[in-house]
Image (tube, rainbow over all chains, first blue to last red; front, side):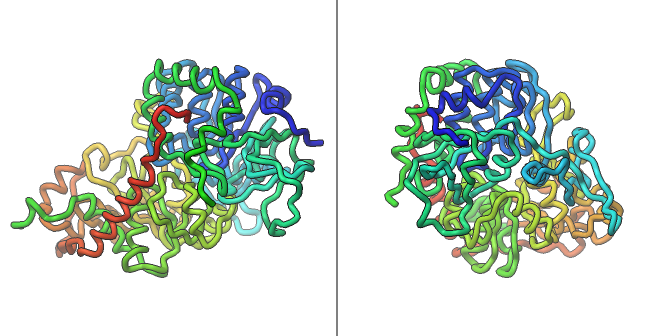
Length: 285
Length: 267
């Protein structure tokens, strides 16, 4: 049964050293507060899965928590490079990390296969792509009906997935809307799922019947964290803090400045601070 | 060439506008971020109002008022006809053959339209780790055609790319066909200096039009391979007042929207 827990307890109960973990959200609904809680609790030797590592994995990699990353775009979207991830890959600082790189199509198909309980995903992809020769997890299968050679990648099955979402009802059903990305697949592919939400409402009775709702029994724990995806955004609640993404490029460029920023804004901070960070981004909707 | 010193527009503006002209109202365009995104939205705001713009975050038929910083800005969803999940985006819409134009940028490009956005140097020990492919490897092979836009430089346009992020025409000729890829691949390259099209047989990009005031020497001096020019070389028409105003207004709105007030706040 799903439990409503403070974020600190939800993370401590579901994440462990050495876990394979996905913090998902395709630009939208990134579970930043959950990632920051994981950083405060100091987990080690994690395999971090995420299509677009974004700022949260830049931060976790920079804090030395990752043994391996599995990804399809290791950039700061629209801004440039992820400088802590680069430092780890290029210079082994603060430690070297193993890299498993895919395309978006490869990752999306692999999550879907995980949700579907299949061992692998089959799709038309990676044709002529250099990734085939550097990632041994990209293989091919021949269609038994047409003879077409298709790409195959192993299903993604995280030990635990963290996502952010708009809201839960009192029973613990969760609504995801807007750019829904890979949220549903990442939750259903995982052994355990933890969701942070903006708010809890009495019921979902007035919702459109085809909206994307994760039933309560697919989720291990829910934590209410208003603003919990900042500087990403929550559709209907607050906008993406594009200025913060631009600013991150400078912060992450320098090892000392990064560490100082992490101390001030993550280590000595808490989930309660997120609501204040999105105040100026809320729309008069 | 008397107006070359002060043509009234920048080379990048010329590039964006020339790229926008290549798009039609009935195109279904998978939009890469950066220069392609600007060109696609100028097309939508000028001569191609009914163009379907698709971003890889799942937004189909989007009409943003400002250019998105990321492929997943909220504005894309709010103005879209519909927004689908990312697996659906790549499986039904791209792999399903519903995209007429994939519009990509490039960090490194070779003369056969192969693109590298993954690493500079060796993959295992890169000199510079770039963001990687994202959606591009499949956009490059599943879209019916691919347009590429980038500013010219010797670092960017090279004889040999360091990594095949996205396959263009490979070694040229019928290389796509030999790999079983049945889409056309790169059919157009728009730079800040010229418009290029692949040779029908060799598939090597060939300059077919120079932008106003640009010389052959300028094109060669900012390109890392020996440039081939078409026998009948056109001059790209200069931007119209409407095109320039549309682009500049769009960029002014975008700049105002992204500046915000983040200084000192947590990210």
